[in-house]
Image (cartoon, rainbow over all chains, first blue to last red; front, side, top):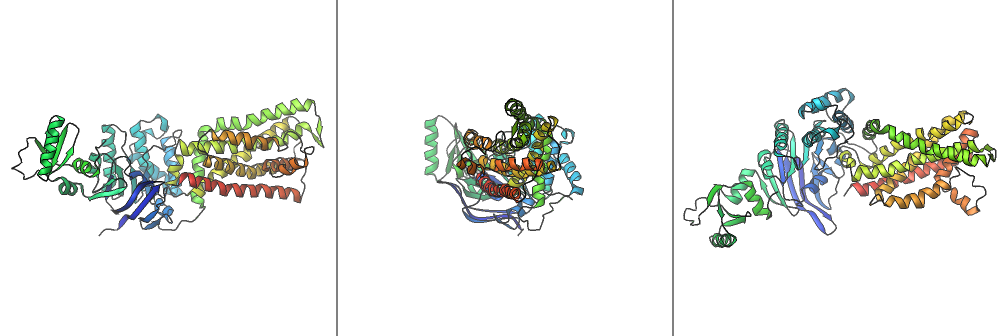
Length: 298
Length: 265
C-alpha cells in the first residue's frame, strides 16, 4: 500500500454548539487525487483548515506528510501548497511580485528562486501577464495565479479548496487541465468541491461528506455502482404522479430521489418486470451524492 | 529543482526564514504605497510642529533650558513615531485579516502566528524609526542645532515604534470592527499623546499625573529623544530605554496572543 500523504482518524472540530467536522477518517495515499465532495456546510473547508493548522481539532489524530498536527504543522506546510476558496492575493502587486513573495515564504533558495517563478508563470500560462497588477487580471487569471502561487515551491501535497468555485465553465475547464497536469506529475492532491463533474473527472477517490462526517468513500465508478447501480429510471410528471411513482418504487424495494420536476429510481438494471414508464439513463455520481447527502447539487 | 529549504528538517520558533518572508512581503508591498504612507506619517507631525512651534512659540519663548521650537521639535518625534506605528498597525492588521485575508495566505506557508506578528511589528518599527526623524529634521531647518546624539533618535524611535506597533496589532486582534478603534483612539491614545510632554512640560502637573506620565511609554520616548539631542541623563535614560523595552516585550506577547486567537480557530 502506498504511503499516506494525509491520515485523519476520528477528527472532531466544534464551533460552540455546532460540530463542523464529526469523527472524520480520511486517507489520502501519496500520488493520488482525492476529492472531498459535499454540499455547503458539510465541513470541507474546515477540514482544509485543520490540515494547515489554521483550525485545531478538538479530538482525533491528524498526520500530514508524516508530520503530526498541530505540533509539527509548520514542517508539513513547508511541503504543502494551499489554494484557498477565497482569493487572498496581494492585489496591488504584480503577478511576478506575488510569486516572489511566496518564493520567500516557502524558503526557496536565492539561486533557485528565479527558475521557480518562471516555471510557475509558465505552468499557469501567465508569462505574458507577469508585470500586470493583480487587480487588472480576470477572475480566471487570478485563480491560475493562486494555483501557481501554491505550487511555486513544488510541494508534495496540494490542498485545493473549491478551486473553481464561481468561475464560468470555460475557465473551469482550463483549471481542470492545470490540476490534471499536476496530478500526472505525481503531486498528491486533496481537492474540496461541490461540483460533481469536477470530482468525477479529476479525483481517483471521492469522499462524500455530509454534516461533518464521511458518508461514503471510494473511486467514483465504484461509488456509483454500489449506491445507484448501472441505470436510473427518470420519471417526469405532475407532483401527484411523482408521489405515486415514489410509493410504488418504494414498495418494490427501489431507492428514489427527487430531482425537482422528476423522480429518479436508482438501480433499475435488470428489473425488466418493472412497469413504470420513464427514461433510462446511466447512473452517475450526482445520484449518489443526492441519495447520501439528501441535498441537491449547486 | 526548487525545494523548500525546510524539507525533512524540524522547524523551530522565530525562524529567520519565516521572518524574512513576511518582511519581504511588506517591503514589496511598500513599493506600491510608500508615497501615501510617507505623506501621512511625516506631514501630520510636521504640521503639529509648525502649529505649536510658531503658535505657542510666539507666546512662550523658552521652556526650562530649551527654546520652545527646540522643545516641540524634539517632542514631536514621539508623536511621529506613534502616528507611524500604532495607527498603521491597528488599521493595517485589521484590513489584512478581515478584508484581504492576507494572513490566511501567509499562515498556509511555513510561518506561524508568532513569526507573523513579530515580522509585522519589526517592519512597522523600522518605518517608525525613520519617519520619527522627520520632525527633528524640520526643526533643524528652523534652528535646532545638530548634535551627535541625534544619531540615536532612529533607534529610540525603533524601540518605541515596536511597542506601539504591537499595541496596535493587539487592538486589531481583539477588535470586532473598525468602530472599536474609536474607543482606543479617544480613551487611550489621545490622553497618552497629550500626557507625553511633547508640547508642554509635565513639571507643573499634579503629583499623581506626573506618576501616571511615568507609566506612559510615549513620555519616555519624548524625554529620551530630548536627552539624545541636548544631553544624556546617564542611568536614568537607560532606565527609560528599559521601560520602553519592557513595554515592547509585554505588548509583543499580548499581540501574539490576540492574533493567535483571531487567526487560529
